[in-house]
Image (cartoon, rainbow, N blue to C red; front, side, top):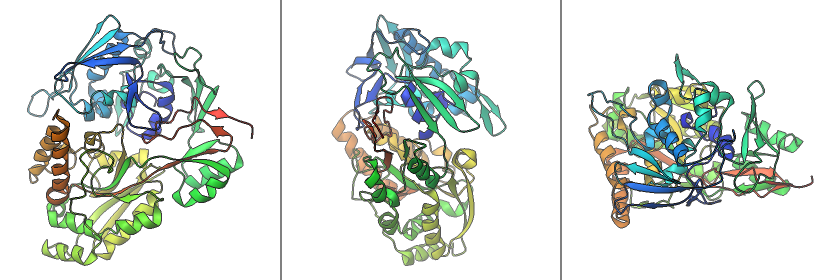
Length: 510
């Protein structure tokens, strides 16, 4: 599925980033915002009106022209999602809030950050409802890429349908994604798991240096390494840290900055025991995170104290660290009356993530820790995109592994990302956990504070409370993921956002 509006994972965004662009982008190798389809912008003093001057001479892959009207069509299209489309447009919901006309259970409008977009000559005037620290950076998200209005209409892009627990997508998403990037969609061989992108010779910037890019799905990490060694692929993402030293000798190993978080999620909806803070603290004390980081993660990885890396504003070391202490964990379980606790523990297969290159080893380490303090586990493993993510969203596991690679450099991006702390209805039983709504309001208040110093102080206090009072999850680690390429492939800059540009790679002689 290649319509980024409905995508939520890095693997889907990987080809999209070569084909599509947003109003803003990010400087190569950083999380710093730079102009992209908007060549410049200004904003009102209150941060509620943004004037984006649209770059001239840009065409979509179908030959139609990019202009301010096309930008507004895209934003209005995103805002106007209904039914299954609204369900799948998760990045919009997480970052912008409600959709046009959307009501909550009480019949009230679901608040939306987005208000309107108006074309004024070559300027798109975007109005939002409240100040937010993440604007305009959030417009650089792949999900908010600007796509051809002509193609969106022609191929019925909004016609997403629910099919049992899955979804079916229209022709646009499967065969005709149409952006402005240096590469354009070629074809998708679903049987062999190969996505083909072709150079777009009408690109407004530097033309692609490669004529084609093939993305091949190889679920097993060892098989990916063997394919590189055999020369059948030119590179792969997320090599196992244990292989880094050997790979450096014969390949280009690019190490990204650690701009991610791995956490143990706790779902409190179905297991009353988890609503007790002492039980959640016991789980935290049971995890030997220091040993895990030292033995299984690469140099530069750290035990996570907050729910985001220490390079992000508002991070603080002054939180409850939950150092490994199995005796303390047993004590807390006893005090909570949970010496015979059983939890449903899920872990994902068929995936490598920047924060979790080998999910099985993560599960093995921490499941042993939990069982060592007397917690019994009902274990379930499912493919990442074959039941795992859907199961987590449906509140099926009590414990699960997830994480987040930052989309841009703000605390709200991490706290409101896969953690969804700005929407406690997902994992918290707010009937018995009223702090869930308090937490959501605190996350929103910090993001809405325009004074940088005050905002950072609010995040420091919020991080302290997340560790001591709320503990909705257990932060585990931040880790520098790597990308490995053949020796003759150069010119690719490692990105903390996994936003690598492969279209301008330089391919030398082997």
